[in-house]
Length: 202
Image 1 (cartoon, rainbow, N blue to C red):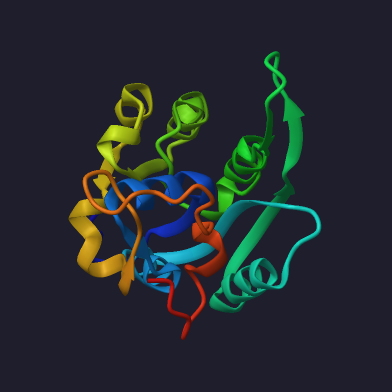
Image 2 (tube, rainbow, N blue to C red; image 1 turned 90 degrees about the vertical axis):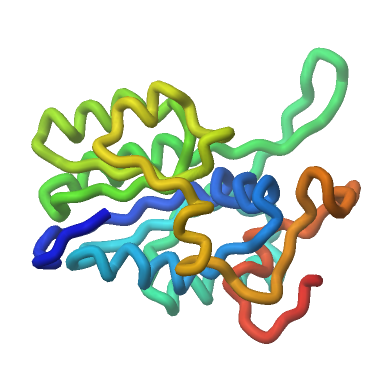
């Protein structure tokens, strides 16, 4: 992602759940301040949006996480996790922020030249194509094993998180990954601790 003159206006859109899942696969954690700085250095950052689901009620650590992101300069969008029961009687919690992401991508389209989308979700293929018809450049960042072919094909540029690890990793923090530590039954959510300084999750 090279813009020598640094004149491109950049909009950053982060799918928190997708980034968390990628971190678990990679086995290392992201520093959200470094993510912001890395992509802001590619041009002129118009805004950075972060989308995350939260339980009700919100506990102190999650509130601290959201406050930390806001302090860094992110516009944080949240939706409450809702409990659903499937046909087998199993209860699970889910909250989709796809609509919020697409809404911000399209309603702020005149404010940026390049949209940087941190997700691998194939549901964004059509919105990405719509942005490109408006003359916008779209960069998708994730990991290949979690990125749909359709989304990668629709984007102007694809960035593998592994290729920018040195620029965006949070040193000293490790997450369970395949072939290493076992994943606990109730892992501590990535979004609870990743933006908090001075707390040891190891």
